Length: 467
Length: 63
Image 1 (tube, rainbow over the protein chains, first blue to last red):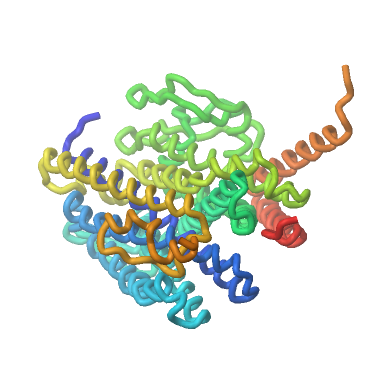
Image 2: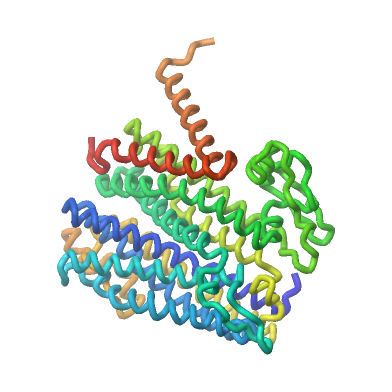
């Protein structure tokens, strides 16, 4: 790999955006989960629902905070690392980012304080309304960002004038050909992420025979949502696949791991390949016979189009696209299997007592995050060598910044983000270790990290624990 | 060779049935049998999940 300025700008953006997406995915999913749980509490007045709400509110607050901070960095990187992109596409992307701020950020900012600190300060219905508004805000935020990103994947409603893109039809820009499919795909991914996270933590407690009522509700609600959502996600994913095959055939050719213009018949479904981009072949390819034809052409002996159908200078790097897709799809299959198993066990009354299943839920707890990362790697690496598909190449979009500057800032980002991630994980694992009984009534503000790391010694926690 | 115990055989049969049903639903939903079968399969999968979740014992209550 040649570490020139263009490559370093890409690596830096890839690193920061990969880190960032973990947190909005979690907070979008948890916001909806909290809305459902608080709604159930208002309806039933079962205190376990309130306990679940209080426990997950803290984790949601941290994910939300880190997501906002790391998201702001990305806006600056558009200008710092990809100045030509900002110059050329600014009239299109700029208003959409601004509309995200005006709609979702204002909504979230208005109600987040009530949601985090108002459980005992406002009435329960107003608090529920605040939770709903925050969940709506996260949904709107995802809508605008997905609209902007989908426009980069399938641009529409613009014309090039004097080296800059000018909007000719805003409706076509916002409702571009892939947005209607990518938005529900991403939202469902976020809700699945929260479902498996919640069920995984519940399963962890059940395996340790702790906080049983809380844990059973978490496993039950998490797997109920997962069972319904994964079916929908697989369906949406297949529709999206067909859409991308129409608009970005090179991405899907790379995603399937075939080089020849037409694969052999019947086509296998590859799970492992060692691609050789220079010689347009695979050094190694392992797959399941017939499955490629069945899944991709819906026939027993259909052929699949390979990457040689795309001119070399327009091909993405196959390895990244292929493995991004396989990680996402492989995890989706595992989620589907776990969801089916959960329904079978629920029917037979073994959902909370079958240890192999509970262990699998603990392992699957972060699966939504990993699958989302895989999906975004598929989307972004599959779009290459374009930053705006068919309109602007990535190498033409980068800023005239020295490679050394980009490398040093990349190293700085790695250290700062490693600190963020470490702090986040420490807090989350501490909250899980403390258990739901110690969850405070509302999020606790801390003036310093040192104080925050003494969360266990907080007055509320002490009062609840009877210390 | 000793015969497997009846409850073990029932469990194995149950697991195999679940696996086959799960694979059938998966193949249907990803469109192997066409779009309309995919839509029908999705609707049936959600309905089945809803019925099982609704009929299962009250979650969270210790038995």
